[in-house]
Amino acid sequence: MQSMDRKPFVTSYFPANTWYLALLVTTLLLTGGGKVQAQGTDSVARRSNFAARWAVADSLRRRMRLAADEGRLLQWGDSVVRAKWGRGLTDSAQTLRRHRLQRIDSRLSHGDQLLQKRYQRSSYDTLYVVRPEGRWTVKLRANLSGARITFEGGDKGKYFSGDLKADYRGTLSVAVAYRGIAVGVAINPAKLAGKSKDNELNLNSYGNAFGFDVVYLSSKTYHGNINSDGVLSYFDKGQVRQRAVNLNAYYAFNNRRFSFPAAFSQSYIQKRSAGAVMIGVSLDGQQTDVDGYDHKGGEARLRILQLGIGVGYGYNLVLGRRWLFHLSALPTLDVLVKSSIRGIDGRVSMPYHFPSVIITGRGAAVYSWSNKFVGLTMVYNASPAGDRSRLYVDREKGRVRLFYGFRF
Image (cartoon, rainbow, N blue to C red):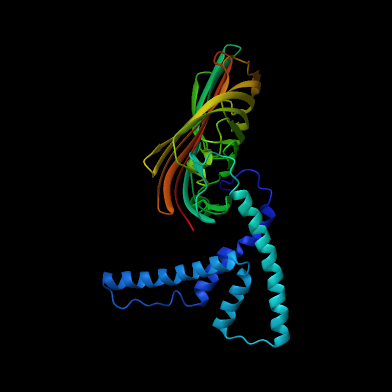
């Protein structure tokens, strides 16, 4: 699920408003917008053909926008469909159909007014932060994420250590937002081809004041080296299985002038540079199972639970009218740590060792022009904890996202 604004108290109206986009596609097909044929193979003819298509699409968009503003969106769409198909209805059927569409249009219009009121609500300094023009935002995204876990320790004179990495996961996704409320769908080409056994779910919500990231990972592709009492073994994919959940939430104090979503969801526009002190909370939990971790063919299980609170800082740098750069760091000190590793020789618990932290770093670069934008975002998590003389675990996870979008 791709990014959305905070306090979505009218999301029940959103599914109905998807008719706006659906009608645009439908009417393009029905009115023959795609029937303009290229006359020749030279570039001039192709440009002319594209311009004609674009003119038809833009004309339909403007007519649809006007119908939506006037509260007769479905009635307009119905008239286009009937005009194209040449359908004839009896007077009584036409009256019944018209009254039904009027009732639905009235509800859609009411829902849209509530969304517009919420969308334009000014709880921010408009010299620094503004809402973008246009109701719809469409984004195409390419995501790449990876994870790594290292550990070491000892018990009863025996030493162990390990360095394991999961396969990188790449996904392609499309997100559509209406007045700041977004839905998205993503596909993993390697998963579709049967070459990946990993599952990852990302849920994030970025608001000017409050926001969070939730990541769930189920992986069977970890691989690497493990040293058990002097015996070094290579572990191939399938021998290590992990299930992990990571939650990071923040509250930004200077939220009237500093906007997280300007960098990460593009539902706001940062006009001037600004920074903010943040407080945050982090929760990190995982279970990792290893088959045949030593020369005796034993099994091991690593369990970790960390809860931390902390203070950080974020800054949005605006260069000119088109560039936005974001950088933030939010370290949280652990207030709760529960961890252990169980193997053939027994159970080793992780002692608390100060400082034990969960570090969340974020970065972004966005370039905007006209009603379009392109950018790159990064989220990085590191969770080092424990004592190297007994049990120390360091988990790292990162995600990079490249995106292109436009508003209308």
